[in-house]
Image (cartoon, rainbow, N blue to C red):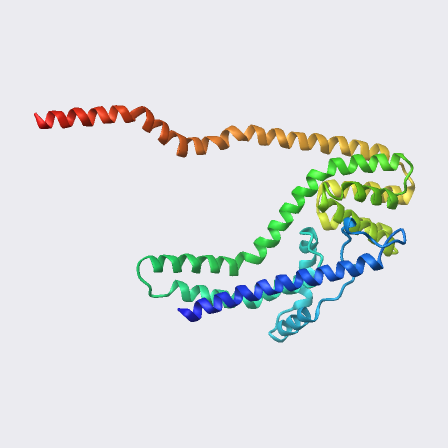
Length: 315
């Protein structure tokens, strides 16, 4: 039993160490990128939230994990190419993240499943048996579905944050375009203004403007924005920007219509949530307030009945 808990604690400590090391490496790479890349020739400040370099190499630890998985027959390169779109949609741009994901899914999960099986088959008694069963089931769920649930949760949360930021971003972009700014300068201005209010949108637009400055194909840089977000709003915006880049058409009318549509959509979403509120409140009313209310209403009646029945029995 002690060996099982020691293995479980070891796996948890190892995953925590990987997360801590990944955060430190991320910080160092961001500092290097801020010094090296800037659109206006000056170092990128902390508020710009610049993404990590576009072609960063995995760390030595990630490369060692990839070599180990290749030795065990895992097709690392093909799996990473399949995972890259989902990680981009989740806002995870570190080159180490897909390797850690595969390592946990293909190797570490087997160890967690072994620990879960040992916990489920343990011959304990009473409350200890129930506790071990619960821990075993929880460990098995993490081993089987943990990575997928984590990435999907990141994608859903990021899409909701981007969806909330679309109307304000389009309004500000429209003002910048109408004032005569070019696309790069307009995106830079939008990022400076929305950095604190919508950090997810700022990070996405920052990456786009860096790609516009570094890549030779501006159309490809704009298409990457739609692929990373996988949202209708961004794909419509990208189509309008590409049309403006190719044919020199005006963006103001298109962006104005899109801004009004998505602002109306956000208002409609708020109204839908407000309409669902009475239905959602019904559940706690039934299970929490109704028993207390029935006790208050019927309590005196029950006490009187018990009092009279006791008096009749004494007679």
